[in-house]
Length: 105
Image (cartoon, rainbow, N blue to C red; front, side):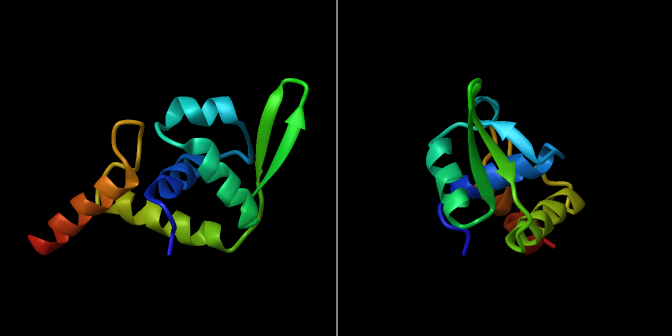
């Protein structure tokens, strides 16, 4: 449903910024892996738009219903006291932690 796992990490990072505009440099500092490909995929899906400026490449978070799905996933992780993704912890690892916690009651 979400595509590659790094796309979830990228989406979680974007939501954690509480702003609509960010640079590709900022997100590459926050997430390890093929970030630019994931940003391109999010642009293709209509969740982001790309802006080429003299200072570099910026992205703008667009209004799209899929952001609510990502936001809900983020809220569940926070509610369950599981760290949302960071450069050290991927979204996939966070979900595995949640699954283990639910299995153990």
